[in-house]
Image (cartoon, rainbow, N blue to C red; front, side, top):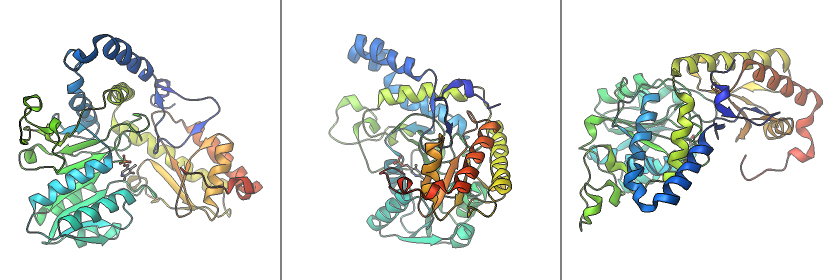
Length: 394
Ligand SMILES: *Cc1c(COP(=O)(O)O)cnc(C)c1O
């Protein structure tokens, strides 16, 4: 049994192992967005901003996500994309440590995060210190302004010890900024409990908010009045409709907004989060570990000698919600599986990635998926010429 499979619309004949890239569609989102379009926008027009709480949506949805990542109310807000929120919080964090000279991250961090860390470091005359995943704590020293990491690695699913790294940064007076793109809705996260300073994440992966759904930003309450972000748009102003000539940030998490909220996208996301109602993240995590252990055991039993090797940590407690394998013809393996209705994805270099969304996956799906994988490899389907053609989105 999946935890909440009946809360999702899933096409027949598909085993969906890509919920780590684009979560499946929860039931109820069509009705909700239809109502916002027809009853609110269509009928009440501009009055809807007040009458239907549109301005509150970034906060309301932010608090719902906060409850899934261990953040008390008033510390999470929905805005922009993860990349843009990273930019805002990187600047905000570095401005709080003006006398320090480095940002610690890892070479294996997600490329967008690396690009932004590099750019903001240049703008603020900081150096970027690249450490191996195992050596982050050793790389933190009295020069460190900020440690900026992705909690669960997008390629391997390797999960950092958030509590230990955050504590190590705080011991020397550095700040931490966590990217929760592959964590939110997938593994238990305790932002307040770990005393995290700042975090960002996206909502179209394990939170199922739909393509391009808005990202979130978390700033610990104790920093609200200290942190300033560089995109000083009117919706982060203390009185947006006073139309003042100069910027004055609003108190609280609202100052991390910049422009008008994407109301339709937020309505979809709000409805999508109903899939988590009454679901404990610990139950999600237990289910995920059991799915991933089964996946690995079945690969060991059926694909031995076929060129797959586990790229994820063998210890389930150190993995996020995916299992990854390297294979010389990884791209072809994934394409051949997709033709069979088993949808995973491919990441350079040579990584076959299988996302495990416990809300809608069952053990039987894993069993069947690995049977297909073994079949593909046994029959050499993955080296067929038609599976070698790269598509724009892999
Ligand atoms: C998916 C992902 C992002 C996405 O960033 P967008 O700006 O929303 O496109 C960012 N960081 C990580 C680690 C990701 O996995």
